[in-house]
Image (cartoon, rainbow, N blue to C red):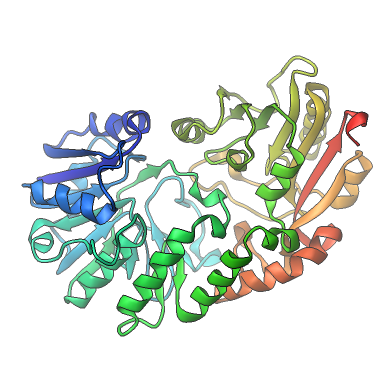
Length: 447
């Protein structure tokens, strides 16, 4: 039997995601919920140690409140897999191997149907894969291991890096860490915020490195590689903070600046984790054709309202929103469909319309079991200017990136900084940029 431990601080998210999927489970389990809405626990380690000490099952599963188990037999299937793993220390659904390769079976990150030859640094789990560390959204520990190894409350007295530390500590005891084929959905929007928003994360990455640097020169975690050089670079970025985006603007910063003063926005093709989450818009409507993505977005409450619809068919009243945005949408339509959509966006908006799209055609397959993810066309800066858009370039120099915007060269962290250095040039000369961001102002008084 699996004992399930979940620490939560939002009962709405808990109810519509994790508990909704738990109610469907066919296997007998023990559920231990720890209410942290009042800040009862100082750290994740403290909370999980308390929950684990109450557990009576053969395995203890520590899980985030925003995880949704994909199948009704999830617990039963996972326990069967765990029973076959030799010298098991910790198992999870997403992790990074000793050579920096990401392995995952989270639906929102899965790439089923993708040819892994095109993306050797990422892999969708079909069989258990041994890794260095796991993402903390799901950690499953044999109770016999938990009796010997508790989460480190002293060093990790916050809410970051406790899982990576536990994995490394288990490995140092001669145990193994695995990603298992157990699909689930993680409804988290954290990735949309810049690195300096996560100063606590950097603090605990430093502690993680200090604790384990004797055994590991480079620690690979789901939130980035931890090494002496990487920590120094991240410390510098955090130090200069918002000044960094003045030199190296990225999509969310540009959108937030352009949407300032817009109180109503419709987000066409919003997906599961729209960057609009960081734009402080009072009222927004998310339109999405792929229902799993719409449900994932709704679970974290990115938009005020949602519409399940094809953006090529939906209609709104004229001038019903301050702004209409379509982020990474046009490339999924034919050129005729995209052009028609731009015309209709202009009818619905009072102040402006905004789109982002790759610079030119970039091949992409229908990953995430979503046929709409396939790219059909590419747009050039000249084409958008002819339609009245002001076009800027984002994402740095196009030649550094390949499939789905991943860096062609390793180590990715180093090439990400090289890409940053090319961003000011790409911004003003979008012809060389990886991504285009284009805005058309409709309210001439705003110009």
